[in-house]
Structure formats: structure tokens, C-alpha cells
Length: 289
Image (cartoon, rainbow, N blue to C red; front, side):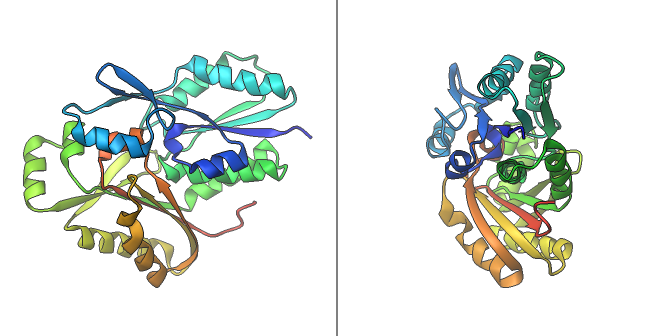
């Protein structure tokens, strides 16, 4: 039986202990403060990034890995394991060129090489969960086709929201105007964002104040989940205290099977800023199917 390897990129925001445990290969994106470039998650961790972001006068920029970087990763796996299969799962093509870069990197290999590139149509642990799931299926000896089918099904059970604490970074990134950001800040507006089925970020609605916004997210999840047992992942910007209250709220309203915490990395953090909370929820089904 051939062995299946899972490759992803650094925006999956997977906790390091899971990366190491499941032998997930990560190709990092790059974060740039001015002329200085840092590998996301390696040279620029969330703990380092958010203080730097707050101090910086200019918004940092981010760039995807080159196709050659993906090719090298695939070739290194195949050189060590000639009978290997590879599934390469990446940040939504609607948000970044990373997926396309992986596709081009795969095209530089021989056509018969068993490498499948998968568009997650999501961001952060919205697809990091899929990567971990795929790695567990691979470790159990499941074939590529089975894993891809399971990822498609799991993606349909995903609910996710980002609660943005400050409008400053959405404004700096050009997603909202300066006047709207100023008025929103004065009114203590907290935007709630999500990602649609095409993998594109869209504004769900706005709430005045953090508590009202969190309650609104809970209400929307309740409408979607309808009493099902769920797995929950809560993302934070290197400050776990920001999600403590949300954990209690979710446990009081839902049948929660498992809760995991993760840090929102520098690439996503560049666009949403410090204090952002991410809520990722999956109804529990047959995870091995």
C-alpha cells in the first residue's frame, strides 16, 4: 500500500503539536515589514507578529510561496518515498494565489506523479481542520480518493465567523473607507465576517460592542446547527484570554464534543488585526467516511 503525505501552507494555523504528531508538511508564506521578509510561522510567529503590527506605521505585506517551493516540497517527499501519494491542501483560491502556485508547482512534475492539489475554499483553521482530518485518514492508511471525498463532505459541515476587534486594519488594507472606519470606531462597531462557498470573505453584519457581537455569532450558529453535536475551534491573535468567555458561552448553548484553541497567524492577522476572534464549528458526522 502506498503512503499518503499531506502538504499545506502556513495560513492553515495548525498548532505545532498537531503538525509534528501528524507529520504535516508546511510551505510557508512570507510576511514583509518594509524591506524585511519573514517566513510566516517560522521567523514570524504570532507572538512576535502582533506587537510588531501594532508598532508599524505601514501595514505589512504578504506573498505566496513560489511554484518552485511547492515543486521542491513534492520532490523531496517523492525522493524519500517513491511510492508516495501527496495531497496538497491550501488557502482559498478566492483569497490568495497560493493554491494556483501549488497547481503550477505540481505541473512541473511528471504527469504520472500522484500529487493532488486541493482548494480548501477557506482560511485559517477553517481549512486547518481539514488538513488535520486528512492527515489522520492518511495515517490510518486511507487512499487519496477516500480522503478527498471526506474533505468535500466535511467542508459542507463547516460554519465559521471572524469577529474583528478594530476597524483599523480593514481600513489600512482597503476593505473599508477611512470615514467608515472613523465612524465605526466612534460607535464601537465590531464587524462579523465569514467566508462563502466560493471561498471569498464577506461581511455578515455589524454589532455595537464586543458582547453583542459574540451573542450574535452564537445566535447564528444556533440557527445553523440546530441541536447537533459539534466540534469547535477557537482562534485568537496570540491572546487566549480573549476566547475564554466564548468557550463558556458555546458549552452552555451547544452539545460540544471537543474544543481546540489555535493562533491566527501573521498572514490572516495582517488583514484583520489584533484582538480578532475566529469561531470554527463542524457538526459531528462520520469523520472517517
